[in-house]
Image (cartoon, rainbow, N blue to C red; front, side):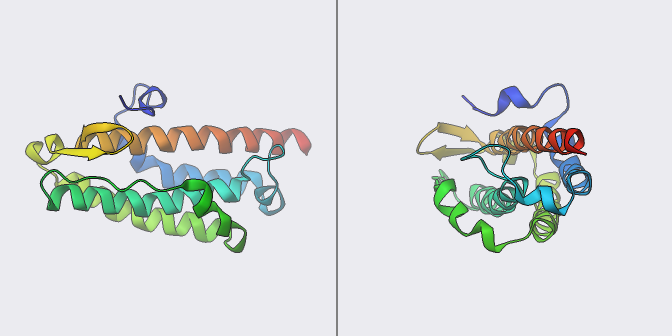
Length: 162
């Protein structure tokens, strides 16, 4: 089962992932530079942290997509997002969005070139079991929506604070 499937809604995964760079840039402008750094609550990620996580994750998704096409029975390598987040204070939000957007564009080009057989190609995630290339795309979309909702909540807090 895909833990992010519930976040997709009624749009196609490709439509969702194609729109994410635009939406992230819009949210960065709405929130403003000072609020990007502030976590919404103690122990929670700031909008900048979430944007850095999305940039990191997009690199991971790109690798997973390419390895899934290049290898039979590819086993996905999980990563510890909290350990990766230890360096996020050294990055800025706009660079994270730029990185995310550039890699996302490259990943979308790959996804659009995938054949029906590619989309059905099986891969294994050690924590989630067997999935397909298409499931990775759906995971990207649900992951995007999950984090966009978090950033939208921060943007709403910023609007109330002004």
